[in-house]
Image (cartoon, one colour):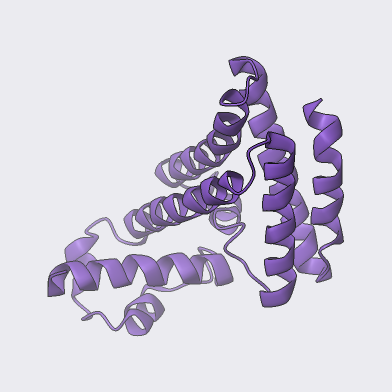
Amino acid sequence: MSKKENSRTRLIQTASRLFQLQGYHGTGLNQITKESGAPKGSLYYYFPSGKEQLAIEAVQLTTAKVTERIERGLEKQEEPVNAIQYFIKDLADQAVREGETSGVPVAAVALETTNASEPIRQACHAAYEQFQQAFAKKLKNNGYAEKRAEELGVLINSMIEGAFLVSLTTRSKTPLLLVADQIPALLK
């Protein structure tokens, strides 16, 4: 990786982490530059549209990582019910153990910017679509009709997203485990 690519990548990675931890409005460009270790002028060199452009690329980076995590988790078990339950239980263990926030990487940015920035809203929408499609793909590959698999992908992702937020705030994995327990009924 060249020095230029490295600075750009560090800026995106740092922004992604800070947006997850502090939200879009709670994260300043000076903080991103400082924590990334990138030269001060590099921010506007790589992101001439500023914070909005950086946020979009941070959401895209995080989306790719989370989608990969979902797909890897779903590969652990062949049968969809078991695979989804395994993924949720693993997520619950990690969330409570580490206070992990990467499970809801888009929520803070989406909540703060949906009405203020159409490009960021579209990036967040694309993120949720990818997460939903990862679940739908597992279901389609196991015989579910396409329409039903896609509907279930939306439901499963929505349940996980909501339960993850509740688990983080209560510091309990119980909400996620309740979702995992409902997967057999949902998928029958």
